[in-house]
Length: 143
Image (cartoon, rainbow, N blue to C red):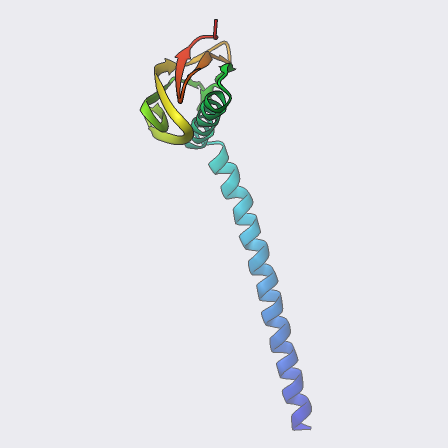
């Protein structure tokens, strides 16, 4: 009779642990969904996305020897936020606002120094002009 009771207690203990683990997994996933939503809507996330996009486009322009025009997105925190694109003959492309910087890495050397903003919810154009192993990023469309 004692063996049956021990087996039942072990089984109940196992079920309680299994339910706790399922609940913990659900809670962790629930937290991840909310954290991702808050994180992805922030200005810092937008900056990182712009910095990586600009760096990738600079690399593509350089490696293919092309001039590319790209309409920069608007950074927004309820209202449009101007940002500065900065790179001084290096592979590091920085996108800066008053709240901080985000950096993207390019495959080639990049030269850029301009402030971009939004007009009517539409971002400004940038020209990625390739010259040998360098890319100059200029404000406006390529001519």
